[in-house]
Length: 189
Image 1: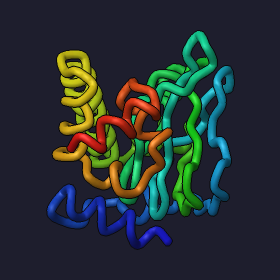
Image 2: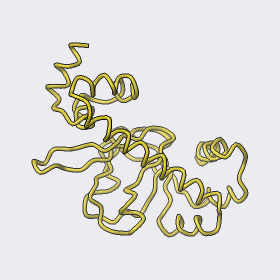
Image 3: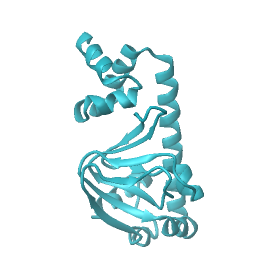
Image 4: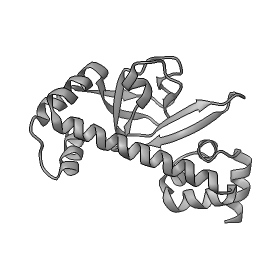
């Protein structure tokens, strides 16, 4: 199952990095049912996941107990609670499989060892962190500057996979609007 991750890494570096086999040995395959939480609020995040198949939602609960989605991760995506994982502190987020998932995961200790022993792995980690940061900042800045209709249009244009693959409830949670508002706005488009 590590062949997909191997190909992903080779494509990122445009060559096969030295010690790649050593890195791949640290990942374990995990098949997970829809609805399974990989992390709940208050737990310490012990893994970084690479999505082979399926979709994962990262969210928090607002003061009313409603889900507020930070992001969705699909095939070839990396997911973890970055702050909780790096600092080994209790998480403020939930990570949930919203489809049946096939994942590769690496434990915190193995991850740290690979960052020290394999410079290319550390470089890949930094690239993933930068991409995650850029995506989050772009999304927050975009969504705070748009009204509800413009948010739906933005999502349709920039992330059509979310619009076609996920439920209205999940999409509304991502856009920061109610499912009823989403339904009403979609009918205007």
